[in-house]
Length: 102
Figure 1 (cartoon, rainbow, N blue to C red):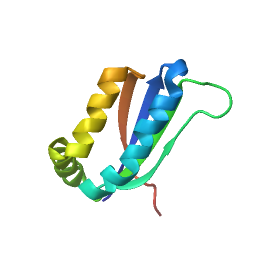
Figure 2 (figure 1 turned 120 degrees about the vertical axis):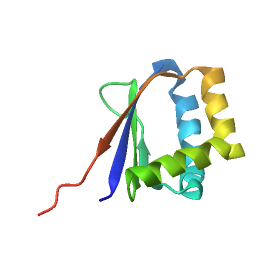
Figure 3 (figure 1 turned 90 degrees about the horizontal axis):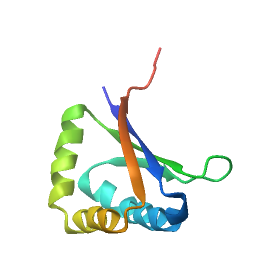
Figure 4 (figure 1 turned 90 degrees about the vertical axis):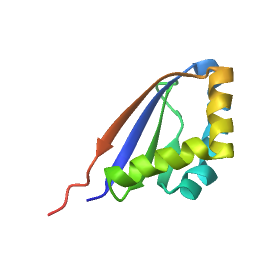
């Protein structure tokens, strides 16, 4: 059974451009490390400090292997460091979802 990770970000609304740059970097890093990236989503109308991402994996074990590869990837670590340095993410939540099927 595949799982989709829903990541909800609470952003500093005055640093949305930095989060967008951070998100664009993941577009190549995540697939390289084994995630099936559905996408990153930025605030457009309404609430201006919530963003999200959806990434699918074959299983929770595949997700764990992906996380290990991500922590060893130079570009991935550079992006994590970019986020820590600029502090545009105020909070991050992960929810693991399964698709409803008949």
